[in-house]
Length: 97
Image (cartoon, one colour):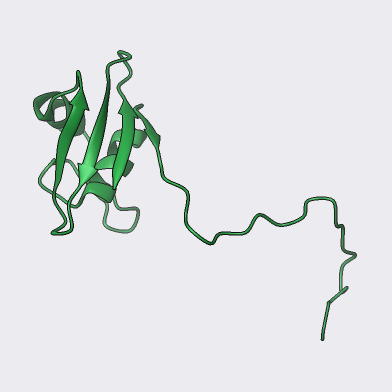
């Protein structure tokens, strides 16, 4: 899976997630060192998935980078349905088939 990221300094890149839980920078101007420097000040929190190292699962690294101001273009989840926003239900209104 490839995920686009952009630093607060507007440097961009693409992270490629590997099946073994690691990742590489597939393209762009960002470096692992820049990512590590940004994560250095993050206070790790297992409940929210925040980490302060690039030596973690990619989803935790990316979530932590978002926390410190990076933009992460998360992929859409296959099969996810968007609900019809035009339908309004009254409290206690249940659709039972």
